[in-house]
Image 1 (tube, rainbow, N blue to C red):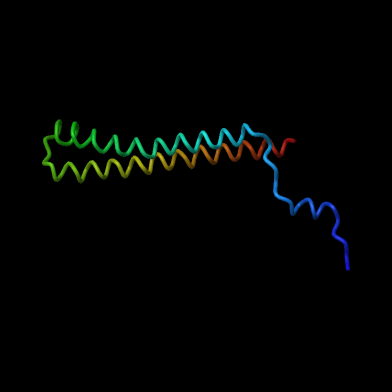
Image 2 (cartoon, one colour):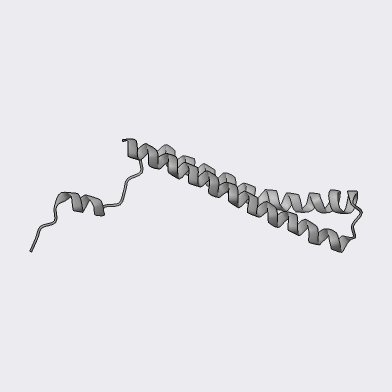
Length: 101
């Protein structure tokens, strides 16, 4: 029976984090976008419903609910797209740093 070499055994071990700052940075990014995901759509829903659709445009209560919900749904997608963009760039930056070492 063959003995596995040390390189193969090292490849099977889980990777270690480079440092604690990358983990803290990732957690801060996640918490920031979590707060955005909660506050931005809800805030936009109520402000657009009250001030824009009912106040400025003079829409009925029923119509303003519908259009404010569309604005909130678009806001959720924008925040989600921003999170994916930031996470992608952060991951590629960490990958480049690991590759240079």
